[in-house]
Length: 301
Image (tube, rainbow, N blue to C red; front, side, top):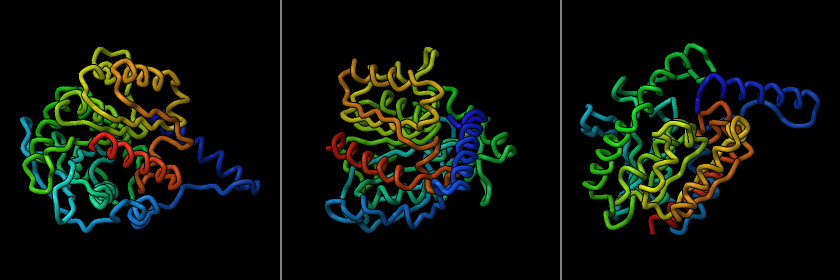
Protein backbone atom coordinates (compact mmCIF):
# COMPACT_ATOMS: atom_id res chain seq x y z
CA UNK A 1 0.00 0.00 0.00
CA UNK A 2 1.18 3.56 -0.61
CA UNK A 3 2.57 4.87 2.67
CA UNK A 4 5.75 6.27 4.15
CA UNK A 5 7.26 2.78 4.39
CA UNK A 6 6.74 2.15 0.69
CA UNK A 7 8.13 5.55 -0.18
CA UNK A 8 11.22 4.88 1.94
CA UNK A 9 11.70 1.55 0.16
CA UNK A 10 11.46 3.25 -3.24
CA UNK A 11 13.92 5.94 -2.16
CA UNK A 12 16.39 3.25 -1.12
CA UNK A 13 15.90 1.56 -4.49
CA UNK A 14 16.71 4.77 -6.36
CA UNK A 15 19.73 5.40 -4.15
CA UNK A 16 21.13 1.99 -4.99
CA UNK A 17 20.39 2.45 -8.69
CA UNK A 18 22.17 5.80 -8.69
CA UNK A 19 25.21 4.29 -7.01
CA UNK A 20 25.34 1.47 -9.57
CA UNK A 21 25.05 4.01 -12.35
CA UNK A 22 28.01 5.96 -10.99
CA UNK A 23 30.01 2.73 -11.08
CA UNK A 24 29.04 2.19 -14.70
CA UNK A 25 27.19 -1.08 -14.10
CA UNK A 26 23.63 -0.11 -14.87
CA UNK A 27 21.77 3.01 -15.86
CA UNK A 28 20.14 4.69 -12.89
CA UNK A 29 17.35 7.09 -12.30
CA UNK A 30 13.61 6.82 -12.78
CA UNK A 31 12.13 5.85 -16.13
CA UNK A 32 10.66 8.74 -18.11
CA UNK A 33 6.99 8.00 -18.69
CA UNK A 34 4.78 9.31 -21.48
CA UNK A 35 1.21 8.54 -22.35
CA UNK A 36 2.31 8.06 -25.95
CA UNK A 37 4.41 5.11 -24.85
CA UNK A 38 1.43 3.81 -22.94
CA UNK A 39 -0.76 3.67 -26.04
CA UNK A 40 1.52 2.46 -28.82
CA UNK A 41 3.18 -0.68 -27.54
CA UNK A 42 3.81 -4.09 -29.06
CA UNK A 43 1.18 -5.74 -26.86
CA UNK A 44 -1.49 -3.44 -28.23
CA UNK A 45 -0.36 -3.69 -31.83
CA UNK A 46 -0.54 -7.49 -31.72
CA UNK A 47 -4.13 -7.58 -30.48
CA UNK A 48 -6.25 -9.77 -32.73
CA UNK A 49 -8.08 -6.94 -34.47
CA UNK A 50 -5.65 -4.11 -33.80
CA UNK A 51 -6.37 -0.99 -31.73
CA UNK A 52 -9.93 0.22 -32.09
CA UNK A 53 -11.12 3.77 -32.56
CA UNK A 54 -12.64 4.93 -29.29
CA UNK A 55 -14.62 7.78 -27.81
CA UNK A 56 -14.02 9.27 -24.38
CA UNK A 57 -16.17 11.32 -22.05
CA UNK A 58 -16.31 12.54 -18.48
CA UNK A 59 -19.40 11.15 -16.74
CA UNK A 60 -21.18 11.35 -13.40
CA UNK A 61 -22.74 8.38 -11.66
CA UNK A 62 -25.20 8.59 -8.81
CA UNK A 63 -24.34 6.46 -5.78
CA UNK A 64 -26.06 6.23 -2.39
CA UNK A 65 -23.37 8.57 -1.02
CA UNK A 66 -23.24 11.20 -3.75
CA UNK A 67 -22.04 11.61 -7.33
CA UNK A 68 -19.03 9.69 -8.61
CA UNK A 69 -17.06 11.55 -11.24
CA UNK A 70 -15.50 9.18 -13.75
CA UNK A 71 -13.97 8.74 -17.20
CA UNK A 72 -15.65 6.46 -19.75
CA UNK A 73 -13.90 5.17 -22.85
CA UNK A 74 -15.30 2.67 -25.35
CA UNK A 75 -14.95 1.63 -28.98
CA UNK A 76 -17.03 3.74 -31.34
CA UNK A 77 -18.92 0.73 -32.68
CA UNK A 78 -20.18 -2.57 -31.36
CA UNK A 79 -20.89 -3.85 -27.86
CA UNK A 80 -18.08 -4.93 -25.57
CA UNK A 81 -17.35 -6.37 -22.12
CA UNK A 82 -17.27 -3.70 -19.42
CA UNK A 83 -14.29 -2.98 -17.19
CA UNK A 84 -14.25 -1.04 -13.91
CA UNK A 85 -10.88 0.56 -13.07
CA UNK A 86 -9.82 1.58 -9.56
CA UNK A 87 -6.92 4.09 -9.63
CA UNK A 88 -4.04 4.29 -7.19
CA UNK A 89 -3.64 6.78 -4.35
CA UNK A 90 -3.13 9.69 -6.78
CA UNK A 91 -6.63 9.19 -8.11
CA UNK A 92 -8.30 9.82 -11.44
CA UNK A 93 -5.90 11.83 -13.60
CA UNK A 94 -4.48 11.95 -17.17
CA UNK A 95 -2.35 8.82 -16.70
CA UNK A 96 -5.38 6.74 -15.72
CA UNK A 97 -7.54 8.26 -18.41
CA UNK A 98 -4.86 7.13 -20.85
CA UNK A 99 -4.82 3.65 -19.34
CA UNK A 100 -8.60 3.47 -19.62
CA UNK A 101 -8.45 4.57 -23.24
CA UNK A 102 -5.85 1.92 -23.95
CA UNK A 103 -8.13 -0.79 -22.56
CA UNK A 104 -10.94 0.56 -24.70
CA UNK A 105 -8.70 0.34 -27.77
CA UNK A 106 -8.22 -3.32 -26.86
CA UNK A 107 -11.98 -3.89 -27.07
CA UNK A 108 -13.53 -3.00 -23.70
CA UNK A 109 -16.00 -0.42 -22.42
CA UNK A 110 -13.98 1.11 -19.59
CA UNK A 111 -15.08 3.16 -16.60
CA UNK A 112 -12.32 4.68 -14.45
CA UNK A 113 -13.73 6.19 -11.27
CA UNK A 114 -12.63 8.82 -8.79
CA UNK A 115 -12.41 6.76 -5.58
CA UNK A 116 -12.23 9.92 -3.47
CA UNK A 117 -15.50 11.51 -4.60
CA UNK A 118 -16.93 11.48 -1.07
CA UNK A 119 -14.13 13.79 0.02
CA UNK A 120 -13.16 15.59 -3.18
CA UNK A 121 -14.40 15.68 -6.74
CA UNK A 122 -11.94 16.00 -9.57
CA UNK A 123 -8.19 15.49 -9.51
CA UNK A 124 -6.47 15.32 -6.13
CA UNK A 125 -2.97 16.14 -7.36
CA UNK A 126 -1.68 19.01 -9.44
CA UNK A 127 0.77 18.93 -12.31
CA UNK A 128 4.27 18.46 -11.00
CA UNK A 129 3.21 16.88 -7.71
CA UNK A 130 4.21 13.35 -6.75
CA UNK A 131 3.73 10.96 -3.86
CA UNK A 132 7.42 11.38 -3.00
CA UNK A 133 6.67 14.87 -1.66
CA UNK A 134 5.85 14.76 2.08
CA UNK A 135 3.19 17.45 1.80
CA UNK A 136 1.45 15.48 -0.98
CA UNK A 137 1.58 12.25 1.03
CA UNK A 138 0.11 14.01 4.06
CA UNK A 139 -2.81 15.10 1.89
CA UNK A 140 -3.39 11.85 0.02
CA UNK A 141 -3.05 9.24 2.76
CA UNK A 142 -6.14 10.46 4.67
CA UNK A 143 -8.09 10.39 1.39
CA UNK A 144 -6.96 6.81 0.81
CA UNK A 145 -7.87 5.77 4.35
CA UNK A 146 -11.34 7.30 4.04
CA UNK A 147 -11.92 5.62 0.68
CA UNK A 148 -10.73 2.13 1.61
CA UNK A 149 -11.41 1.67 5.33
CA UNK A 150 -15.08 0.75 4.98
CA UNK A 151 -15.84 -2.19 2.65
CA UNK A 152 -19.46 -1.08 2.52
CA UNK A 153 -18.37 1.99 0.54
CA UNK A 154 -16.82 -0.25 -2.09
CA UNK A 155 -20.00 -2.30 -2.28
CA UNK A 156 -22.08 0.81 -2.94
CA UNK A 157 -19.63 2.27 -5.44
CA UNK A 158 -19.04 -0.96 -7.38
CA UNK A 159 -22.75 -1.72 -7.54
CA UNK A 160 -23.57 1.78 -8.79
CA UNK A 161 -20.72 1.81 -11.31
CA UNK A 162 -21.54 -1.59 -12.79
CA UNK A 163 -25.25 -0.77 -12.95
CA UNK A 164 -24.33 2.39 -14.87
CA UNK A 165 -22.10 0.42 -17.24
CA UNK A 166 -24.86 -2.09 -17.91
CA UNK A 167 -27.07 0.74 -19.13
CA UNK A 168 -24.60 1.90 -21.78
CA UNK A 169 -25.17 0.98 -25.42
CA UNK A 170 -21.46 0.12 -25.80
CA UNK A 171 -21.66 -2.64 -23.17
CA UNK A 172 -22.39 -6.27 -23.96
CA UNK A 173 -24.29 -7.38 -20.88
CA UNK A 174 -24.17 -11.01 -21.97
CA UNK A 175 -20.45 -10.96 -21.18
CA UNK A 176 -18.95 -10.70 -17.70
CA UNK A 177 -17.45 -7.54 -16.24
CA UNK A 178 -13.73 -7.14 -15.57
CA UNK A 179 -12.13 -5.00 -12.89
CA UNK A 180 -8.59 -3.83 -12.33
CA UNK A 181 -6.90 -1.74 -9.65
CA UNK A 182 -3.55 -0.36 -8.63
CA UNK A 183 -2.04 0.22 -5.18
CA UNK A 184 -5.06 1.01 -2.98
CA UNK A 185 -7.20 -0.17 -5.91
CA UNK A 186 -6.00 -3.75 -5.45
CA UNK A 187 -8.21 -4.54 -2.44
CA UNK A 188 -11.07 -2.69 -4.14
CA UNK A 189 -10.78 -5.15 -7.03
CA UNK A 190 -11.08 -8.03 -4.57
CA UNK A 191 -14.13 -6.47 -2.93
CA UNK A 192 -15.74 -5.72 -6.29
CA UNK A 193 -15.44 -9.36 -7.35
CA UNK A 194 -17.04 -10.40 -4.06
CA UNK A 195 -19.79 -7.78 -3.87
CA UNK A 196 -21.00 -8.13 -7.49
CA UNK A 197 -20.21 -11.79 -8.18
CA UNK A 198 -23.00 -12.34 -10.71
CA UNK A 199 -21.42 -9.77 -13.05
CA UNK A 200 -17.69 -9.56 -12.24
CA UNK A 201 -15.88 -12.54 -13.77
CA UNK A 202 -12.25 -11.36 -13.99
CA UNK A 203 -9.96 -9.14 -11.96
CA UNK A 204 -6.41 -7.83 -11.91
CA UNK A 205 -4.57 -6.32 -8.95
CA UNK A 206 -1.25 -4.53 -9.52
CA UNK A 207 1.02 -3.68 -6.59
CA UNK A 208 -2.11 -3.87 -4.47
CA UNK A 209 -1.77 -3.28 -0.74
CA UNK A 210 -3.75 -4.91 2.05
CA UNK A 211 -4.92 -7.94 0.07
CA UNK A 212 -4.51 -10.20 3.11
CA UNK A 213 -4.63 -8.74 6.61
CA UNK A 214 -5.57 -9.91 10.09
CA UNK A 215 -8.82 -7.94 10.01
CA UNK A 216 -12.15 -9.81 9.71
CA UNK A 217 -12.81 -7.67 6.62
CA UNK A 218 -9.58 -8.71 4.87
CA UNK A 219 -10.12 -8.96 1.09
CA UNK A 220 -8.72 -12.50 0.89
CA UNK A 221 -11.47 -13.69 3.23
CA UNK A 222 -14.04 -12.57 0.65
CA UNK A 223 -12.80 -14.97 -2.04
CA UNK A 224 -15.50 -17.61 -1.30
CA UNK A 225 -18.13 -15.04 -2.32
CA UNK A 226 -16.60 -14.59 -5.78
CA UNK A 227 -17.59 -16.24 -9.05
CA UNK A 228 -14.61 -15.06 -11.07
CA UNK A 229 -13.18 -17.20 -13.86
CA UNK A 230 -9.71 -15.62 -13.98
CA UNK A 231 -7.73 -13.49 -11.53
CA UNK A 232 -4.31 -11.85 -11.78
CA UNK A 233 -2.36 -10.74 -8.69
CA UNK A 234 0.83 -8.89 -9.70
CA UNK A 235 3.02 -8.13 -6.66
CA UNK A 236 5.80 -5.54 -6.35
CA UNK A 237 9.14 -6.87 -5.17
CA UNK A 238 9.40 -4.42 -2.27
CA UNK A 239 5.84 -5.18 -1.14
CA UNK A 240 6.72 -8.87 -1.11
CA UNK A 241 9.89 -8.11 0.85
CA UNK A 242 7.81 -6.48 3.57
CA UNK A 243 5.62 -9.58 3.99
CA UNK A 244 6.18 -12.57 1.74
CA UNK A 245 3.23 -14.44 3.29
CA UNK A 246 0.60 -12.16 1.74
CA UNK A 247 0.86 -13.65 -1.75
CA UNK A 248 0.69 -17.15 -0.32
CA UNK A 249 -2.46 -16.40 1.65
CA UNK A 250 -4.10 -14.85 -1.39
CA UNK A 251 -3.12 -17.74 -3.65
CA UNK A 252 -4.36 -20.28 -1.11
CA UNK A 253 -7.70 -18.51 -0.79
CA UNK A 254 -8.33 -18.61 -4.54
CA UNK A 255 -7.14 -22.19 -4.87
CA UNK A 256 -9.45 -23.28 -2.04
CA UNK A 257 -12.35 -21.64 -3.89
CA UNK A 258 -11.22 -23.27 -7.15
CA UNK A 259 -10.92 -19.89 -8.86
CA UNK A 260 -8.07 -19.77 -11.42
CA UNK A 261 -5.45 -17.29 -10.20
CA UNK A 262 -2.05 -16.13 -11.41
CA UNK A 263 0.12 -14.75 -8.60
CA UNK A 264 3.56 -13.40 -9.46
CA UNK A 265 6.15 -11.14 -7.85
CA UNK A 266 7.46 -8.73 -10.47
CA UNK A 267 11.05 -7.41 -10.34
CA UNK A 268 9.72 -3.87 -9.99
CA UNK A 269 8.90 -1.40 -7.26
CA UNK A 270 5.50 -0.59 -5.79
CA UNK A 271 3.81 1.70 -8.31
CA UNK A 272 5.56 0.38 -11.42
CA UNK A 273 2.51 0.31 -13.72
CA UNK A 274 1.06 3.84 -14.13
CA UNK A 275 3.10 5.74 -16.74
CA UNK A 276 3.36 8.87 -14.57
CA UNK A 277 4.71 6.98 -11.56
CA UNK A 278 8.13 7.87 -10.18
CA UNK A 279 9.03 4.16 -10.34
CA UNK A 280 7.37 3.38 -13.69
CA UNK A 281 9.05 0.36 -15.28
CA UNK A 282 8.03 0.15 -18.90
CA UNK A 283 9.22 -3.41 -19.48
CA UNK A 284 7.47 -4.80 -16.42
CA UNK A 285 4.40 -2.62 -17.00
CA UNK A 286 4.11 -4.08 -20.50
CA UNK A 287 4.36 -7.59 -19.12
CA UNK A 288 1.64 -6.78 -16.59
CA UNK A 289 -0.51 -5.27 -19.36
CA UNK A 290 -0.14 -8.39 -21.48
CA UNK A 291 -1.12 -10.61 -18.56
CA UNK A 292 -4.14 -8.40 -17.81
CA UNK A 293 -5.41 -8.74 -21.36
CA UNK A 294 -4.93 -12.51 -21.15
CA UNK A 295 -6.84 -12.58 -17.85
CA UNK A 296 -9.75 -10.64 -19.32
CA UNK A 297 -9.77 -12.75 -22.47
CA UNK A 298 -10.04 -15.89 -20.36
CA UNK A 299 -12.46 -14.63 -17.73
CA UNK A 300 -14.79 -12.60 -19.91
CA UNK A 301 -15.10 -15.08 -22.79
